[in-house]
Length: 289
Image (cartoon, rainbow, N blue to C red; front, side):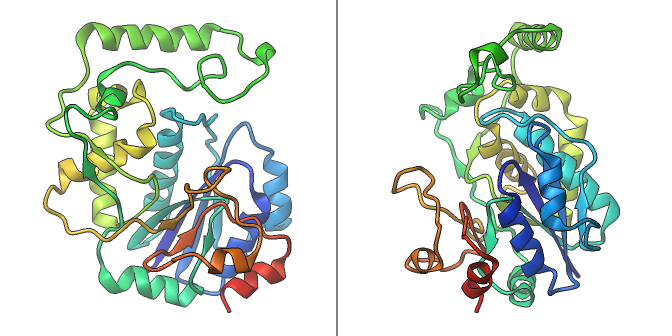
């Protein structure tokens, strides 16, 4: 059995290159990478080498990914579909390109396969919780004119593509969103067995109303997979999600620029750390020694 690492890449080609080198030590690990269409693909190719290592596949279909938008989910499912179709992996792990493993490659595989359990956060959102409004109300985050992140004013113009999306949003508002028995929320990052991934992908593909209902929600990367998982596997036993990050310090999430700083944290039960930006390859290697 093997593990497929699904990487959402946006702005950290150096960390991704270090992660690739660290995980290449195991023939049981393969990486599937989606580079945001707004990012510089050449920088990633340079970091990974003139010819891609055998364990890395770049997703040819690239999406403009916007924070808090459904485009993040679309990129995730593009990766998942590609990995399911082209690998025999038994487990699939979603990470970002600023993530670095906390275990050597062979130990990482053993840890994932050892329990055989999903690693995902899925807490039920109470009906009166603020986060419930992220689904019940209507949002469109997937453009420069509508996303809360900073863009030049000159980049925020509205074109036909944006108007078409707003027309689709109006249609959803007219006939209403998919009625959910429960909404689940959790960290974006997960590790799931193949069966669970196939089931979630099938539901994502077949239920257009459910998909479009989340398309016009807010921060669906923290609710969509989590909800599909619990709708499909309501009683499944799960382990904590696999990613360490630090939202207690500014900037949030905190960026770790040294091995010592990261080692001071409680990394128990985590497989990866996020926002890792060391200065040299030696530091990345040192973390795993």
